[in-house]
Amino acid sequence: MNVPALQRLLAELRSSGIADEKVLGAIAAVDRERFVSPTFAERAWDNTALPIAFGQTISQPLVVAAMTEALRVGPRMKVLEVGTGSGYQAAVLAKLARRVYTVERYKPLSKEAERLLIELGIFNVVFDVGDGSKGWPGQAPFDRIIVTAAADERPQALIDQLAVGGILIVPVGRDPTAQVVERIVKSESGLKRDTLMPVRFVPLVTGALPVLGQG
Ligand code: SAH
Image (tube, rainbow, N blue to C red; front, side):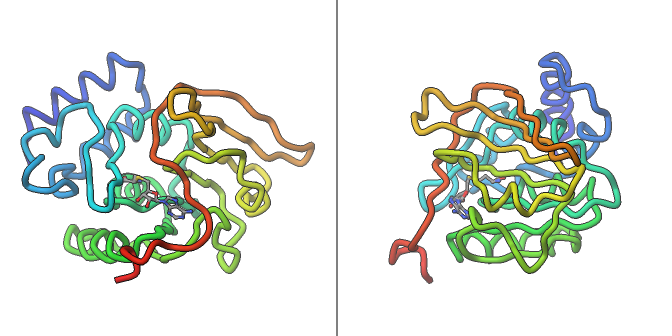
């Protein structure tokens, strides 16, 4: 682990408003360098999104930190992540939650993330391949749900699979230049929604997989 680079990133996250020490601790406990290709190893601790396979991205650390903070994850919680990608966000969540369920539509990304997390000694993450916009009905309800791809509109299936008292964090917006992260809180009396921050995510793609990703 590149400790000076990590310390610089943590300082940057703090000065950008991330205050939850548990979230900062989880970020410090996951070596981001392991989740990017060797080509980008030198930039692994920069506060930027980086490319991964299949034209996807590992999210910007500040976005991971802000969305994780907004999710308010507790140690006994069951969390669903839609969009495994590199597995980095899942690894961070795994440090905070009891169990993380993560869904990815590209099988090779899911398999690689699963292999890496086991190698890193993270055993409380369960992987599935498929359309995560439909959630994971067999494991619902979830205390927390986080979507790490941008949805055209609020995914109803995920709202349905949220426990009472649950929080859903989802980037919403068709236009990549006008996406915002929304937080939806479910209570006995209904849903409450607020907007957290502008973001730029790869799209949440529903329906069939391209041939390339079926390997
Ligand atoms: N959380 C990831 C970020 C990945 S980018 C990380 O920490 O690296 C978003 C990911 O969502 C991509 O890998 C993309 O393939 C995946 N994705 C897009 N639509 C999806 C869907 N409907 N179901 C599951 N995964 C999806």
